[in-house]
Image (tube, rainbow, N blue to C red; front, side):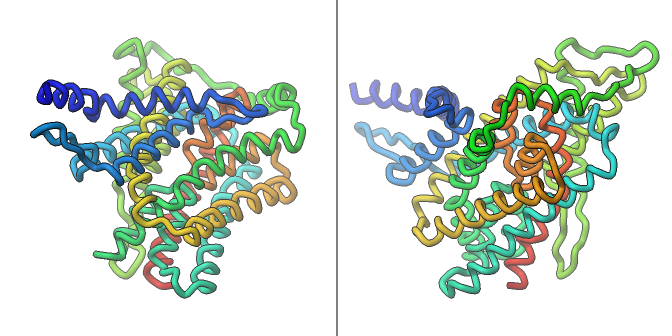
Length: 404
């Protein structure tokens, strides 16, 4: 009987089952709305983090002579793969959606997005430096982890770890896990609460926003070859092309290198393929339904893959002071960046929030903003701000651990 029970538990707690069960419960949680505010897809993150917490307290248990494992290095690696695939799907879809209009509408006003990408990261970095100077118990390595977690930047996190070795890497990982929860939920709630505080008429704002962003997209000339009907060929092509772009390493001194990584590279790849829409005679147009599906699938996989390890690191290393520092590193650049975008660059509410999600490199927040605004046109502001913000956070994280 015990062997049968162990077999059932082992099957029920298989990796595939856990991934999809987290998604099921997370979507149910995200559906709960309180005064018009809901977690949406970010509900999946909460459940993933809870599972990570459970894994920390109960990594395995015995049923008879059988050991049922909830957490191990192999399982951790599996979640890493899920996170990477999710990031690639989501960011590529965003690039392909924004691509047809991105370069055609890029003008002098677009400089505001580029500036915001740098400003938001600079504000977060300055906040991290101040926290280190005020608290002698806060190491630069922990601060770098808190900053990249607060800004939900996996490339920044990876860059910081590459610059150090041994225990310092563990500190960075711990800081990332501690700050990640608020880093996601803080921005997700921000993009929903701000329009309500400002009493924005979402329907009217959406209508004017879409009209202002309208641009004629030329149809490819000549007969094109459709490789398959669903658009998977051009999508996979954009992912593969983006990974090649992300793999390019640029030396920045002291033996350190900068690269866009898969997240930045796939965004650029999606923008380029989305802009040209064909390669020679090969049709690279993809239906909006396919892109929306890929974007949502990528988002939920990313949240599951990043959330579970984040929950494990959160429990192992959490301190109230570290959590507060991480929350500050998320809140200050988010709010100050919003104020600058509104009063200095005069951006509309949707462009403002879109650029903030890009500047905060917040994949989940963009998904929430699209749902709140009711249009994926807000992806353009995200796509315009994200690349320079990504470059900035990668450089900032290396600077903090190497020179602070």
